[in-house]
Amino acid sequence: MIATTMILLLVLIGLSIPVGAALGVLGLILDPLFSMLPLARALGEVSWGTSTEFLLVAIPLFIMLGEVLLRAGFAERMYNAMSMWLAWLPGGLMHANIGASTLFSATSGSSVATAATVGTVAIPQIRRYGYNEPLFLGSIAAGGTLGILIPPSINLVIYGVLTNSSVPKLYLAGIIPGFALALLFMVTIVIACLLRPSWGGRKVSASWAERIASLVHLLPPMGIFLLVVGSIYAGLATPTEAAALGVLGALILAAIHRRLTFSMLREVLEGTMRSTAMIMLIVIAAAFLNFVMSATGLTTALTNSITGLGLSPGWMLLVVIVFYLVLGCFMETLSMMITTIPIIAPIMIALGYDPIWLGIVIVMLVEAALITPPVGMNLFVVQSLRKAGSMNAVIIGSLPFVTSLFVLLALISLFPDLALWLPRVFGN
Image (cartoon, rainbow, N blue to C red; front, side, top):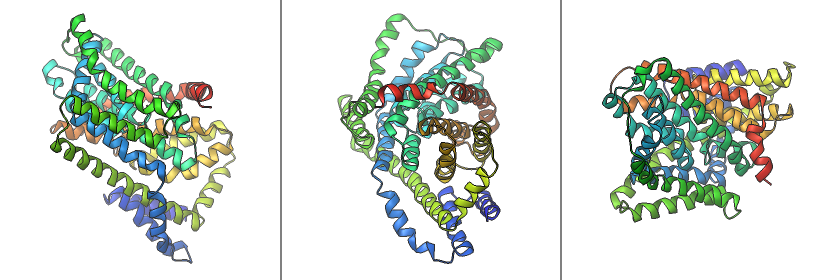
């Protein structure tokens, strides 16, 4: 049964069927193969029950928040300000890529949106300043991964829903690893450019007066971050309500800067609807697949086969890491989380792992999948923004940053308090 399911899934993905459709079709195929009851008749109820989950309303709101900040021009001004403060480091504007991605991640909650936003502004600088193209592109793709780790993260919301974990605690747990990962990315750039100075391009200089004046452009994203995250931890709003506050704040800022127009709102709504439709199709299809797998006993069989290995907690963690790294080469990240977490999380929690810590580890493994071929979403986003050249340049440039992810993963495994200290201190 397990082998048949895996083969069917690989065949459907290999046929280039959209992931959401592939998961739904797989559920419809498994139903008559392994079930005596017509499970497909529950599709409507499963779809309704999944799509009316209150916490999932945060997803379109966070997507809309990122769209407003992008369409209102805040992203470009934020990038220019970051370039003035960080371009003196070896690697120049590549540090601005990471810094701008970090700030935008703290408002958008989406890796793809972060990579697309920063890449749109940054990619024209490659030839202008003579940067090493693969490393520069890799820094954009890697910086985008911060969008699902630094709060407010859409993927952490999904994990919280699937495991019944506290989303505010997950957000707290993602802060230190998120900013630590951004720092490791910058260290990677510094090391690469010290070894090969020509990769760092020509210097971008700015006076102290220009730097101080640019700080005003960093205030909008920081203000939105404080509004969203601060309202959650002040007990004033749930994550969903905080997302709505963030959208309202972004619209007010756009109006103050006279960028709030009907055409801008139309673009915001179109972008939000496209992204939300894609995500919710995956969520609903994966929920139906999980329902079929549970009803046919496939989930129990898979869980028993894993626990029957008799591995220690440490070895099981290593198996999970390898499992996600391999699976990430073939599956889109959101669908990978939704289909695997209901199976993996109960096993790991039963072995004594903290569910909040486990959520950060899984999201980090999903981050690696975003920048590893052949299905790394951020690789495709960056390549689409280039409009020319080989995909190999983006892949090669991302590899040093995958190493940084592994370094942080090792640090969190050795020192769990990197993720658990803030939830323990402020999460009660």
